[in-house]
Amino acid sequence: MEFNTSPYLLKEASVQRVMLKVLLALLPGIAAYVWLFGPAILIHLALTTITALVGEALMLKVRRRPLGLFLPDLSAVVTAWLITLTFPPLVPWWLTVTATLFAIVIAKQLYGGLGQNPFNPAMIAFAVSIVSFPALMSQWPGTDGHFSSQLQVIFGLAPRLDGLTSATPLDAMKTALMLAGDSHSTSVSSILANPEVFGLVAGRGWEWVALAYLLGGVWLIQQRVITWHMPTAFIAGMVVISGALWLWQPATYASPLFHLLSGGSMLGAFFIVTDPVTGATTPRGKLLFAAGIGLLAYLIRVFGGYPDGVAFAVLLFNICVPLIDMYTQPPVFGMKDQ
Amino acid sequence: MLITLSEIKQISLNGVWKQNSSLVQILGMCPLLAITTTLVNGVMLSFATLLVMAFSNFFVACLRNFIPYEIRIPVFILVAAAVVTVIDLGMNAYMHDLYLILGIFIPLIITNCLVLGRIEAFAAKNSPLGSALDGAMMGVGMIWTLGLLGGIREFIGAGTVLGGIELVIPGTSALQILPADYPGFLVAILPPGAFICLGCLVAWKNWVEARAAQRAQLPPPAPVAAGGCH
Image 1 (cartoon, one colour):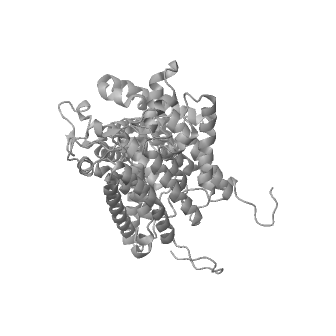
Image 2 (cartoon, rainbow over the protein chains, first blue to last red):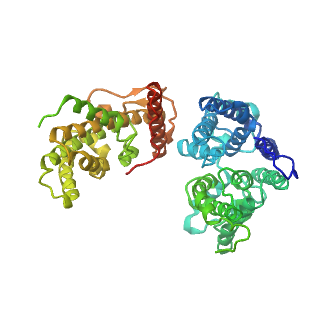
Image 3 (tube, each protein chain N blue to C red):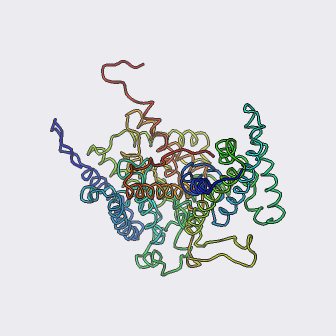
């Protein structure tokens, strides 16, 4: 999809170029991931990329749309990579493949392809998988992973040992606080002191992956692929609620920094809520949309039953997008506000 | 008053295919979403609804000339509720295990707007025999749709077909189609799975109609896009 319009001030933007930049911006995060948690993620990346392209090609064929126009736009690859990065890296191969097919075939192509889907396909894949296979979807690896053993687990050749996987830092925090109950026998700071699960401020290893996503995200803003509105509002939304609770009871609520560097916060802020298709489009709408997701993601991950809340928060706010867009439409130039 | 053969054909075709309650009228979504987790559940609830519709249509059609127009809706509901109560007690007595599974959805047949819809649209204006046939055929349409939907959801969600058949026909058992270690794609059994499967079935029916119209060189029929009632 090439656009060539009159001002000729910028290089022509195409879907392919935008998607390529998003993929490039994900590379630092993937590099940190591989460095800290082993190369299992690369196997899933390859599998989901192939699955997404095959699924997209088949659906385009069935819908009689031009393959050459839509397949190289790389949007399916972005979906595949986001699915892989949100899933635990040691899930069996068939789970990421099924989830990717679900995202491409049902969440994207059945709604009419790129530009028509009301829900973020990658988040649909995550939500469907965590609802269908909660046990598999909450086994995250420890930081010491050997490639051959990871490979065997993914392809079902070795049993899924409990020692190989552990809860996410978010889950570890929630479980420890829940076990303590109202007795106040433990506090956030003493839980964070466990060096096996936690690092400097958040999960051991995970904080560096999150910072690498942040790096890629800032580059995307500099490249004008995304605007500052959504990431800033997402972070602000999460900081406001987590900061308020943290200031009120620092022993039972973790700091805003912990939450920003845990789970899917950074990936969500820069790569998921900024999806141009399923997000709000007006400037004020973007702020409202992303802030709402940050707030809701915090509430679901702290008070809900699931390990992280970004996916459900994104899907819930995807439904609100038409309403948000309607009420935040800027006045026509030259007209006063009503 | 007897009915002619062409009327029988017309009513049957309407109920089973052309005006199919789930695929065209999009009525009765509440039991459809909640109950079609297995083929047996879907078919048995549809069968109970078939009996309710056939009998309540028949009774209302018999009484149609004596019901004042202004209070017809409460009267229709009373007649249908009486039939539902009979079915509810009957299933509780003779199919108790299945009754426990279908639970609240048997008495809730009265709130299925398909029942009142057929009484108002058909039985209030037609002969008793034709009305009974209309109710029964709407039920047949519901049986095959909910059975198919239940079968698909059960197959994807659990890898079996005909689970719970032993509650209806003693001595039989469910067919394990996929290997026993199939993990089960749970979302198919949850309500979102019902919506997705139903959407695919509606699309399939629209596609069949469009193709048939193309073959007969008629203008394509308006596809079903939206509608519905709980």
